[in-house]
Length: 128
Image (cartoon, rainbow, N blue to C red):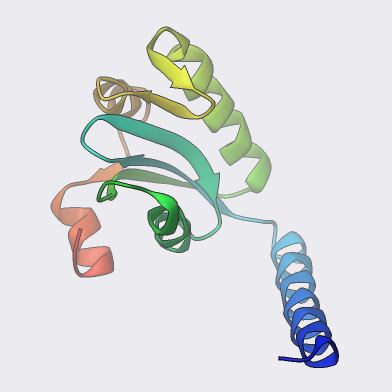
């Protein structure tokens, strides 16, 4: 593929991504705090679309990843606050970065009793 074509594809992708970010910011930026696991560790993070985030993490993961729990928030700020709260509360289980020991899943659900787990997640995506 020549350089001009690659440049045009990249420019189009970047423009679409910028437009999506701008729309999200105007809409108040509702976000979701998620807990994704691989059977040995869990990742606690923040995303507008946690299913897309799961797919992107799965690409580089050596083990099968599963969405374990999600909790939605009205604004991106409140979701970011909740993510920081969860990660600070679970720092004793931290492996590295946003990855924690498997016990963190139960703690995440205790921190956020309204989190969707199990069958509620499976019905959202189709498979878990």
